[in-house]
Amino acid sequence: MSNENPPAEKSGPDVWSALMVAAQAGDAAAYRRLLGEMTPVIKKFLRSRLFNADHIEDVTQEILLAVHDARHTYRPEQPFRNWMYGIARHKMLDYFRKQMRQGANEINDAELVTFLKDPANNPEEALSGKDLQGVLAKLPGRQKDILVMTKVEGHSMAEAAAKLGMTEAAVKVAAHRGYKKLKELLIAHGYQ
Amino acid sequence: MDTSKLIDSLSKDLQPVRRLPAPVARAFILSLTALVLVTGMISFLGGPRADWVSVLQKPIFISGDILMLVAGFLSAIAAFTLAVPDTKIRKPVIVLLCTATVIWVVICLTAVASLTAQSFHAEVTDIGKSAACFKALIFMSALPLAISFTMALRAAPVWRGWTGYALTLSMASFGAFGMRFFCPSDSSAHLLLWHFLPVVILSVLGSVLGRIILRFRL
Image (cartoon, rainbow over the protein chains, first blue to last red):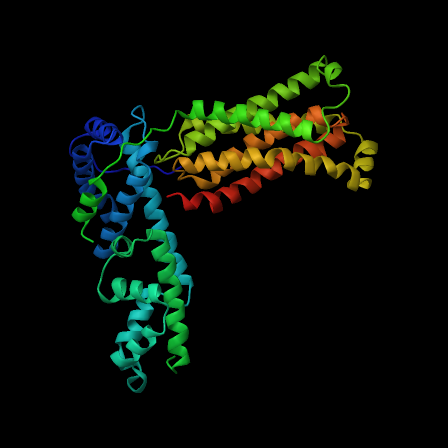
């Protein structure tokens, strides 16, 4: 029951509402224009709440995917901005929840990156590229592919999902399992 | 993936979608379905109570049942309105949910007002027999509830806990309505313990269920 104060849209809510109605009827050009105009507004909305540019990009893409997935629920009698910001707010809260969960877990991206990259902490036990390759090779195929794509090659979850022909949710689950498995394997190799 | 590429891939080969009907229409369809299922389950469980025609003459019975139907329908509308993304829970939905909840509070308080220590004691000491009504209520509500969650998943609920609460309150209300035609007992203690309070408890559990089940949608 929060009060949002979202930024104003470029074309105005009526235009966006009409574009969405056209998109619901299958008008690809209207849909492309709508998503294109929505994107900077969503980013502006996120920028005041998130600080990491990569995360803003990821959450923006997740919001666009959710808008796509939920486009049949929009009704023209509802203000478009309420509908859109409803989804944006929901996805942003989801992001915060995930961050909190990761914070509570032993595994999180920041720790993992620090662990992998910072030899100053323990020079003798710093992970070599060869070790990492060996450990990664022991991961199940999909988990390995996802970790390499998202953590080494720098792709977003949405992109990894598109490349692997999986849903984004499935990629996230597999990535999380991959992190856990990777940690177990690293500990088994003597890294603490 | 670059966001512009994502936009291209989403808009490429865009298929037309069938817009969801209005929440009131969806609530009407669900309520009708729930009533048909509850009627079917009463038949399956052995038919309605023997005196169901005569109890229909009693104003207290009729008014209680109408209130349950109203609570069920109002909370179904609230649930399907909540299942469409929005930035906040708006006043009409709050009014609908509060009305449905207050109806159940009134129903429970009415039963409490006519409660006697003797009848309460009898219900508590014979739990095995009386709890059959609780099981029957769950049986009557379960399938409509599963259908209602499926319908909510067709939308995109962002207020998952409240949607779960509203759906469960709605389906349990229809279940309790059916129970009044199935169970021959009109004892206040029995109704309170095994018909009415379970609706309230199930609704609270429904909010937890909503948080778990409905998160897989968006």
